[in-house]
Image (cartoon, rainbow, N blue to C red):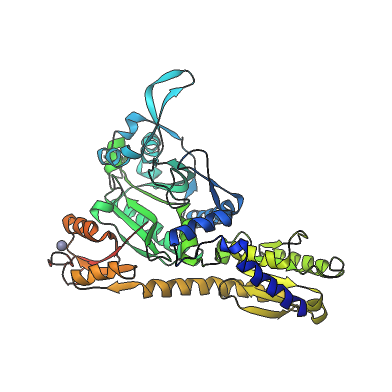
Length: 494
Ligand SMILES: [Zn+2]
């Protein structure tokens, strides 16, 4: 272990050196910390177009894993993928009054094609309800064609004044599901099924606990009957809306004539839903798990779950490297994503700090002495534990450690969320809670938009959602003292 002792010293030296100090500590400035991590871990970069980001390969690899995890769940629940156009005629957006009002301020326009002004301006999709609704109207004939369960993976553009990589950018990647149903009950069941699917993905794959519930009238999607959301709590105590699912009722069906002949031969409007999550989830994972050394990735969405760092000493290329490659091959065969960092231009210490900063869940160190002892040293990113581990049974030990890390990160995030959730019974307590340590505040609410708006104006806290099962618990509105319709969760939010 002698060499590894030396290497550990190198790591400590590197940590204090230029490399890691480039990341601002969370306690000093969380927002700065976030931007430092995004840049230093090479997740994303600013582009020449203001408000638009470039997703770098490491960030994109996380997105691909998010896509896979969600796509599998969509398909298991009967959905299929399709693709609709980027550009939408202006007249289509105008057809659903609330929808146009909600999105008009954020729309990017195309008014010219080649050297000609367009007769009808086009908009770049901020979301695709109107173009997809138009197509459903064309495709749908009979109740036998229902339900339609289509998802699309694409980009959308919403003109933003203030942007932050992954959390709010003018263009972002997402998926948007659009479904049409025969009955109101089926549309509602679909809306909630997807919300449950999002919660399952966030908690099981991103290890990010979320509160699922219904949005208030003022926070619902433009044109929806009901909007549901999942809300997560970030490391700085601010909430992040991580996904939304909308029951659109017959609003879009009426605006776009999505009609079908019913079982009773009458012409009926379909009941539709839409739902989406975006690259914002990457921002959520960064801010849920990261620490002062950088990113911590849950194994399920880590592009590399294990990094192998061979200790280059003596005739390491004849002894250590072949063994490292054999370990890698066996791990790959068991479905583990592995990076073997055998670059000679960097010291092991430098590599330790680098991959720590980039959030790889598990590091495997192997040197000549380890080979003599037929062992390796495993280092966990989440707990920083160092575990000398026998070569014998190594792969299965690593596979089970990855499961343990995934579960450990989730448990830690749940603890953090619970420690930062306060139930209050008076407005004074509410204000104190919002001014003191940030987090979720649970309070009774009467259902009035006025109380909600006053709370927001006075404390900056927004009503995140009303979790399921908290309705009709009795009690009074924290603002006006009137009868409460349920426990609402408030927070300052991204
Ligand atoms: Zn009230």
